[in-house]
Every structure is written in C-alpha cells, then in structure tokens.
Length: 291
Length: 297
Image (tube, rainbow over all chains, first blue to last red; front, side, top):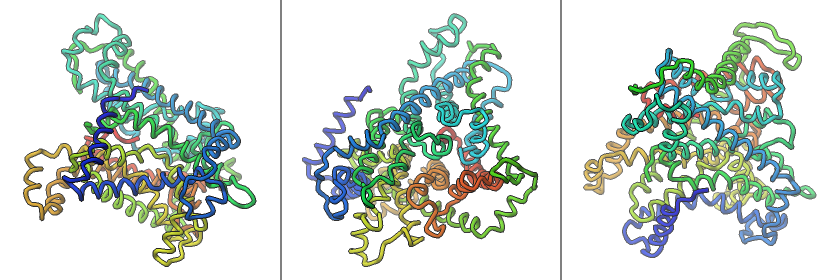
C-alpha cells in the first residue's frame, strides 16, 4: 500500500506541535476537539482494552486495565471461531467488487465522454436513475433471481449486484470531461484504439480519482451486512460482518466471552480503517475535500 | 457533456463499452425493481410457492395494520432524531476543525475515521458496552443518573441506544462533506464573520448555513437513507426489533416478512413504500442540486 509519507509526517509533526505548545492559541477550540474525538474513540478504545481480558475480568465491570489474556483472544477468534475464514471471504468479495466496479465504470465513462452515439443522454439518465433503487427496494426479487440462477452461496451473488455504480460512472465521467482536449491531443484518437487510449492516457491522468473511488468501494463492500446475510446461508462462505452475528453466542458456562467478541470486532474494523488512513488524501479529494 | 472534436464515432463501440454497466443495472436493478412492483400486487402463500393476484390488498393490509403503522411512525421518529443529531454534531466538529490552526490534519483523521466503521462492529461494540448486565456504560449510567438502565426490556431505552450507535457511525461522513463546504466559503466573508466575536454563532447560522445549503440538503437525504436502511445491522445484532417492537423499524419488518415469514407479496409492498419515501427524497435532492448527484451508492 502506498502510504503518503509527506502527509504522514505532517500529521505527526502537527500532533507534536499541538502537544508541545500547550494549546496556547485556541484553548477552547482544542478542548472541544479533544473532547469530541475522545468521545468518538472511546467505544473503540474500551473494546480494545476488553479484548485483552478473560471472562472473569470482563465480568468485573469497572476493571479497565489491560487484561491477562493478552492477544490470545485474537488468536482464538481467528482460528477456533473461524474469523480468519470470514475475513478472507470478505477480502475476496471486496477486492472483486472494487476492481470489477472500477473496470466496468471506466468503460462506461469512456463511452459517455469520448464517443458520439445515439441515445447518449438516455443511457446516462438510465444509469443516474438507479440511485433510486437501493437494495431494500428490490431485495425480494433479487434474492429470487439468485436462487433461480443457482447463485445462492456463491461469490457471484455477493459481487454481481454491486458491479455497476451510478456514483463511479458519474465521478469518472465528470473527471474525464474536465481533462482539457489539449492534453488528450497527444494521443490522436484516430491513431490509437479506445482501450489503448483508456489505459495509456485516461487512467494515468485519473490516478487520484480512481484510488479514491477504489477506497470508497472497498470500505462499502467490506461493510455490507444485509445482502450477504440473505444470500449466503453456508457458514463457510459467509463474510465477516455476518460472522459478528455468529460470534454473539460464544461463551462458557452461561457467560458470554465478550473479550473474544471484542477481539473479533477490532479485527473486523481493521481493514477498512487501514484503507481509510493509508489513502485518506485521494479518498477525501474524491469527496471534494482538499487536504 | 463536452464534445471532443476527435471523438470516436462508432455507436457499436460505445454500446460495447457500456454493455457491462447496462447488463448489471438491467438485471440487478431495473428488473428486480419492476418485479417488486408486480409482486406487491400478489398474495403469496405456501412459503412463496403459490401466488394469486390481489390488486392493492397488500397495501390495504399495511394501511390498516397497527403493527405496521407503529413501525412507520417509529422509523420516521428514529430518522428525525438520527438525522438532526448527526447534522448538529457533525457541523460542530467540522467547524472546530475548520477553525483550528494547529494539528488540523491530525484532528481531521481522528474525527472522520468512523466513515470506515462497519455498522455490524458499531452494533456489536455497543451491545457489549451498554449491555444491561455487563456493560460499563450501563454501570456508570445507573450510578450517575440513578435510573434503571435495561434496554433489553425498556423500549425507549433500546430506541435511544440504537440512535446513539447510529449517530456514532455516521458523524464522520458528515464532517467530511461539511468541511469541504466550509472550505468553499470565500475568505472575505470569513473575515467579516470573525470581526465580531460576540456574534460568531449568530453569523455562523446566517452566513455559513445558507452558503452550505446544497451540502446540507444532500446530507439530510443521505442521513435519512442511512437511518432507514443503513441501520439494519444495528437492529439485527442489538434488538431484533424489540423489546415489544419498539425498534421494529420498516427495514426490519420488511426483512422479517420476506425472509422469516415468506410473505413475499406483503414484503414487496413494503419495498414499494420504502421506494416512494427514499426514491422521492433522492429525486428531490437531485432536483435541488446536481452537485452531489454522484455520491449516492
């Protein structure tokens, strides 16, 4: 993963500057921000602390120390409770959706911007209009379709319905349209085929946008819950979000092993969180926020 | 749409490139949506094996069902609370980051990370931390406020816990878009606002909010869709619609009718109702401003 070192260093030195200057300039602003950030982080920090605790330590409610289980809850949840398998399933699903959606949307945007053809506006509207059809609006027939095609419990069902995206097509179309003709001139269209043009000219010029869309799509796919819950009934093929549900009953002698469940929660959060932090700049720029 | 003087002319080539997108949206978006409309006019029985045309009976059933009407009311109340709280908290945090001079980059990432937070993780973490018997939040809520906190039996408490978890997950997304909108406020206006410290908050409302209104409309729509659909994992993991249906929101009722009771016609009718609400909102949003047309799903 290409971590942006400049931004990293800037963030670190910013944080150091804040700490060393003892908040001279804007004490109230800093106080408000630190409070808000701690409030937002606290459930996660508590979850992490508890993930190191044994069952008796968890049931000693006000015990907020690092527990004596260390990282063994993590090992146990990954192996004994098969979270590793769910995470691999989620990873495969998310990568297929991300790569597939980007490829499919790049083709569509190429056609919409660099081709003259009949019904262009109608096609564009047809794609735009799908924003009105979130999964719950079509869930019953979509599920029946998967059953009819024999796609239940397959990667096809997990990824197929996510492969086209109005969002990605719009953003790429808008980005292609903003590339000045003069920059495209170098590759006279009559000299190179459309796919060569896409790969050699458009993709390199859209690297930030493609990365940002990729991160957004990866996070979106990784976090899906309802659709996998319905279309995957074979536990071995399930994704990690629904795996969280399987973990709920883990325990011993009537006591739920919350430490182990919190370890699972922390692990499930890690991939999208790492993606967000590593690619924050292209991600935020895709959302229109310059950093 | 810009026309390029050297555009490709092949209509067949264009449709070949559009084929994957069109195939996916026709098969997985248009066809099932149309089928939902058709199914909503049928009554299904024998676990979906048989069906017969009943016209608008399913809608009539829903309109006269106390359970469903209560679910609709609770969903709208929940959405109103989640949307308002998220906007207010998001605005405050975004404005503080906008104002701060030291540590801006670090604060930003520390405030927006819940954008990556899976709803199922948010639900699992809150289920534990606010658990009536072992939760640390429960422990302090009960000892500080002297109330009995047991949202496994108290409907309104379950409602509140879900709302808090829902807001927690959604604030980061709002901060991103609000910061982007604030950055677009012209510097001259900004200085004028800063001149008079006493009136900062009033001017904030009078200057920033109107300038940010396209963003705010967009966020109201996105937060509403999130409150309606995106919170399914919270309900499924934390309350299963209970206690006594206090968190039985429309999406959960739909899920149960479709996949637990195999009442596909009735479930499809509920899908159509959700489509009218959310499709309508999206339509309004697209009409008000197409600046954000692209940040849907």
